[in-house]
Structure formats: structure tokens, C-alpha cells
Image 1 (cartoon, one colour):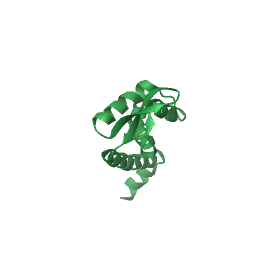
Image 2 (cartoon, rainbow, N blue to C red):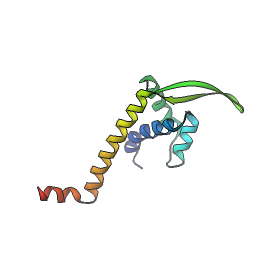
Image 3 (tube, rainbow, N blue to C red):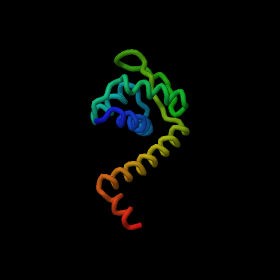
Image 4 (tube, one colour):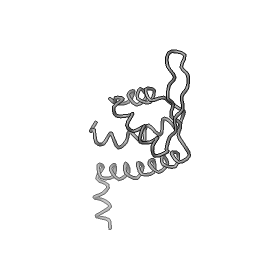
Length: 111
């Protein structure tokens, strides 16, 4: 998949996963990696930015198999941002599908 295209969508995927349940970084990477080739170097900068912009907050949770893990929890602000991203994605994907399916040309002719 095109790298630039993917980068724009990964942020939305990260927020969507965290909105379902609190997760630690590696867990987020593994969830996304089950769909597409991705590495930690892509996800962790996104998590840092989302934290800085207060879309997520972090907390430490003890692990039974090693050191404490940093978990990410979506904030109310993050929920609103995710909703906005989803609406943008729906509109964008509909437009692209219309163009790919030739519906754009039909709309232009009908007007």
C-alpha cells in the first residue's frame, strides 16, 4: 500500500482501536499489523502526537510478564476528533469510489 496514503489513515486506525479499549503501544502495532505491514516506528510518533494534542492520555499498568506498560486511553476530545476523522473518511472514500466507478463523469453530464 502507498506509504503516504497509509500514514494519513493510520492515525484514525490508532484512535479507533484505543476507543474500543485501552491498549499499550506494542498491542496497537500488532493489531494494525494483522491487516497491513507496519512497524513501531510508524505508530509511536503518532501516539506521542496524539498525547501531546490531548486526544489520548497515558497511564502505567503493571504486567505479570515484565515491566509496567504504558497504556493509552482516548479522551473526550479524542472521541470528538475520531468522529470528525470518520466523517471526513466517509466523504473522501465516497468521492474516490465515485470517481473510480465513473460516477463523477455521469454527475457532470447530468448537470
